Image (cartoon, rainbow, N blue to C red; front, side, top):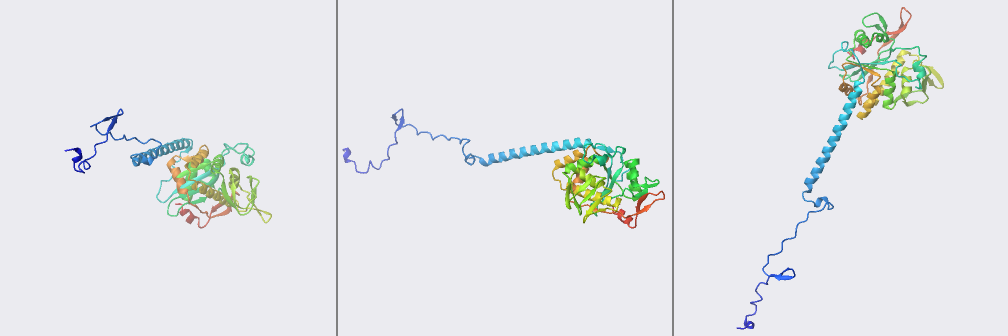
Length: 369
């Protein structure tokens, strides 16, 4: 049978032979099929999402950044803590722990004392003339005595004690309360506790230099003025009305003013309330300071305040750094109530013009007990 005699379709139905494999330009029959093309890893220039296991790599990057942020935070907190401890170590301590009252759950009383020590006041100070005087005044006396109560059911309160308040001093003869400081801070604490019945848990003392540094660290303070006011003796000079931003020198002049004079309808009107008016201005100042400190959320600003006060403040030996920062946090957003101690003026047998406790004083004092 010839090839032409095969039935049609027999050859057409047979599978076609495999394509020849070229090796070196020659056909090689029966060779295995070529290997699949190799898988090439994506380069760094390719989009991140095209990289295999992208979610895992992304998670690793977030973990790295979180760890780096935590490390930086630890370093900042550590540096802050170390610097705070250094500054805290520079603060003088007063050994009055034996005179302080034990802590109670009803609130904590701080005896805040401003002294008229001139140490650290430069002759270049704009108010050096009124602060330093003629150079004959030396030593230090109490210029401000305030009881600050923090905590308790009645909230935060402060009460200024007039310097002319006539009391038994440290269990002895009656004199002005500011003379108690001559016997030292412990004698003043015992006088407040014994003659007024107010327990004192902590003691804070600031001199003129510390006062100036505190206000500078706060960037000044704002005091409301109903009328323009001045006092040549203290250096106070305010020509505006309403809220006035005072620098450190003018703030000190405001607090120390004893001849406070307002300009009302073009007339000079001297404040006739004497020491009581001065007490009110001191309380206004302290409210402004507490407002500034309480509104400070930057811990480094608090460090600046601590740095400004470190060489010009004295604290009782029971007050710790954590207590101090705790006090600053508790004052944040608070508006201390100003409490006025009822007094009346009288003249002693020796001719001294002083103040005595008036009716209702015991009720007011009871709020701090």
